Length: 100
Image (cartoon, rainbow, N blue to C red; front, side):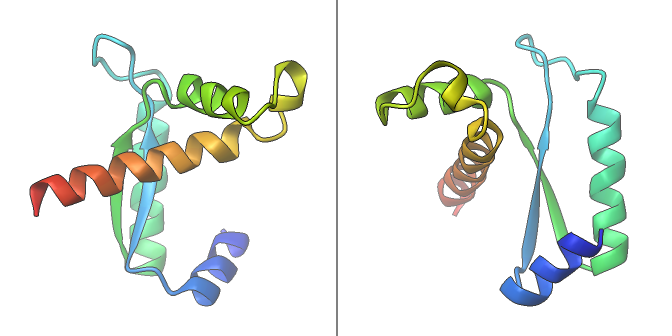
């Protein structure tokens, strides 16, 4: 939480985005409850709006993005979570723009 607090102080976000794992059929994943509890902790601790975003297929999209950038196989492992997080944020911003 302290690392998150430092980032919040540095970046001053108005919203925090947390990926919500779901199965392909839309059912929640066994980790979904854990992510929801984490989102509540963030909201309570930092007083910011926290949005949950379906993260289905983000790891696959990340792997495809990395492959397109010439990063393949084991070389992807170091960056996969970071690029998947980028895809989660893109999903959030796309949904927000569509509802505006």
